Length: 110
Image 1 (spheres, rainbow, N blue to C red):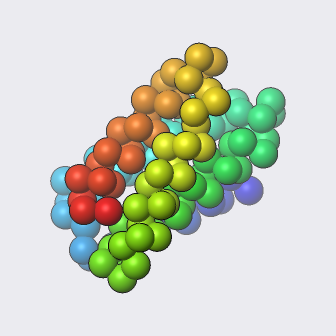
Image 2: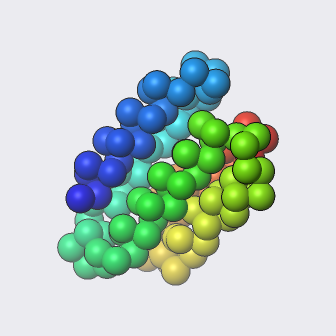
Image 3: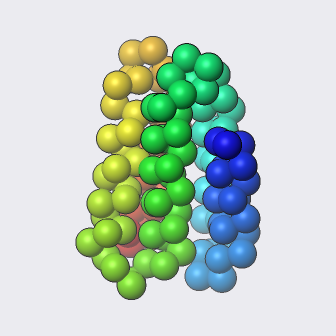
């Protein structure tokens, strides 16, 4: 389920006309890193892995549809950052990737 959701997020990013190519590639690279970091969590923390992936999806959707609902977009980015707070000690790379993803989306004006 999680690999399919990440594939959907990738497809959304690839087809979004309002995201500059450089930012799109950065987001795709970060998403690839997220995919690698979340994969082991599926076995040990399935619910958390699903929450992280769902938060990433919501944040990317907010980026694609930015301007339509700015309050929800800001909440989506905050939700993404919050989804990994419990993993700071055990999965620092995951937290780093999600933080970079949130900053990139924030820099887009979300």
